[in-house]
Amino acid sequence: MQIAQPSDVWQHIQYGYEALVSQRPNGDKTVYVSVECDCDWDVENGLQLVFRNGKEISKLGPFDDYLSNADAFGEASLDKWCIKAGADDSIRDQAPKWRSNHRLG
Image (tube, rainbow, N blue to C red; front, top):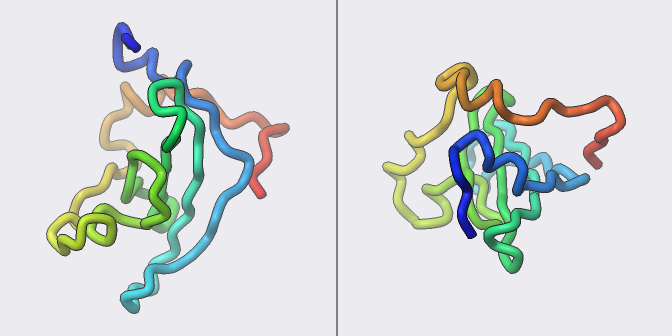
């Protein structure tokens, strides 16, 4: 599958209708929201978006039920990886906007 340019990726993602709100088992009191999506390039695994405190994406990749890359790979240093709100407005602004009829949960 070829995606011509980065802004075209959103045309190949179908957002899930359920969100899981949880905390990590390591004592971290941060609130995480995990959304399972379908994507055209990985039908079997789909795509997982995990939001940390509603301000950052802490994990983005194939769905595996983990809330962070640190948990998924057993590497604590990966906890520092995240995409912060406003970090790249050009990409964020190209994402489809949630419509009022698009519900989670």
